Image (cartoon, rainbow, N blue to C red; front, side, top):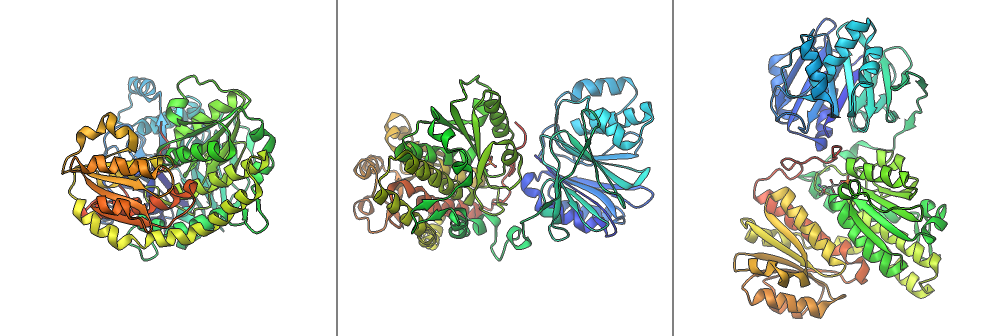
Length: 615
Ligand code: M6R
């Protein structure tokens, strides 16, 4: 994980780097640091804590002069989050300074060799080893910074996006990438470096995304030189025009990004199907499917790989693909799939789901499936992300930037894309008659308005949150399409409020979890009118008779559950397959309010990061 930012040009680097780091805090926020070259020295400040803590420390302790600088916001891998382990790191001579996102796996062996040669280390990090390796190469081989970086990187095993500056090179930043993202913003007489484009969006719309095993020597007044790290051959940069805008990455009047993103869902879902869903014409247009239709139709099965919330969207997709398109589906945790020698053939289609498009386990699962000959399709939000580039074809969710660590609009837009895919395949296979297909398309068009209605439950959900904010445990139950929603509701609660929560298929309750139920246990039950309603009413009765507190999410107008539950939250009626798009809304709001009431940092929960680029 970690976020990196760099600037070289004619402006003051300090405010650009600080603001950039704040935008990248979704990538990690346990410590932060900055290094500025004032023309003579590279001054550095770093601290445990957030970018705001860094600001205070830097302003009090260092010169903020300089038009060349680099900064880092960390999610600790090697070494605890403390001042010493924070980036940037100096080399032993003090000439070189590095920031790094990733892991150097063979750092211990390299460190031992460097210690034998007299190097000393002040941190426990793999990154300090790397900067000293670069220095050792530079001195021993008598080469310039760029060449030293290239030689050193050929000796390391692992993943990295790095930026290195050299006190002897006042007009240069050297960057390199393998496995972690790195974008270069290209302005007029100035360049920006960052883990994504958000730190430089107000300065330039032109960006170069480095490919794996590429490095760049960025020099003022010169064109950017791209090289292959392996053999030093020249690579040719392609400059892309960015689609991002500034408002999209700011809070827009909401207290937290998470709340803003919950409220963005009607618009995000609309953007997801805009241009794809043509209800009147009875058409779903998806280029990635149209161009590869045979692959899907001839597939033995679909394997879905993902992590976290994206995995929950995958579970919903399993139900939809099997139910509507009658294609067998298996859903796998990417981290398990990649290490368990799975049987995959060229008759399989693998769908990888990822908001960030950078999740290391999902990326590795894709590479494995490709090696085994499977056709790989990506469902990503971040345009140009590593997963989007690694897959054979794909469909973007178009949710817009999701900054809150807890995924909200990513979930509903992923389900929307996957539903469109399932419908399209159902139609192509001829397993759907025209009127059923038309009914689905028309109902999908109603979903943004129905999500708006579901959002109206917010004041009620806030009142309910106040009742349960001090709970220590919580159960979430759902059946069928709402079982993954129960899992997702529980994940949301635990990750931002630190209340222990479990999601279960409601019928599984009697096989164990029922033992937990007493008058102190809140149980959130998703009990919409379509799909096993009578069964779930029985489950609610079982909870009631054991004095559990029931918070039920029901369809508008429900009578039966209302008589049993302690609290009832109504969402609009829709087709059974589409209920997750509505039932998940009050659960997102419930976890949000409980976390706020408990004083938790909603957008940056402890120990987490938005993009999990380590395995
Ligand atoms: O970017 P991805 O969708 O690949 O991320 C996967 C998970 O890390 C992510 O969904 C995580 O579980 C969220 N924090 C959940 O809110």
